[in-house]
Amino acid sequence: MNALFLTQAQANRWANQLLFQELHKLSPAQWAFERGVNFGGIMGIANHLLLADRAWLHRFTGEGESPSTVDAVPCPALADLWPLRQAEDERIVAFAAGLDPAQLAGTLRYASMSGAPCAEPFAVCLAHFFNHQTFHRGQLHALLGVEGVACPNLDLIYYQAAQRTGRA
Image 1: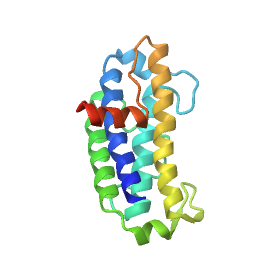
Image 2: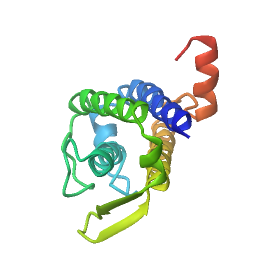
Image 3: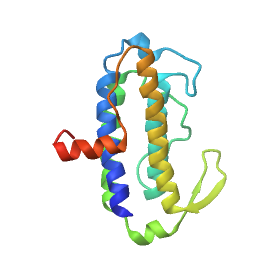
Image 4: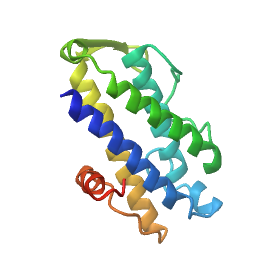
């Protein structure tokens, strides 16, 4: 299972690199446009992903920032968000590379964003972590299309193919 989570972490980093290349094609107005979707639009979703990743990594490791909310916009400028996204993706890969099988088999005890105590299987929380990223990247992919930006496929299977062809 460790290998699967490491692959997901590496694919996450790869997908974010491709996605942000496309996000940089947006005008500032397109980036900030409020669409009425969750977290407002492209800027809100991209910031939410950073904050949620920080929250979960803190729950998993006890290290790094522990945001009090996942619906803020700490980086209204894409140029400010991109280096933070890259750093977080490197943290995710390093974390996944060091996963302990005993930890994966255990229970993660943490507080929800509202402060409620939670206890779930660690591996399920980690699967949720990667699924959450994929879900919101899909939203961003779709919203890029609405803005006329054709984003490449970001699915895990495309990451695997890119690895074989040396395009990752």
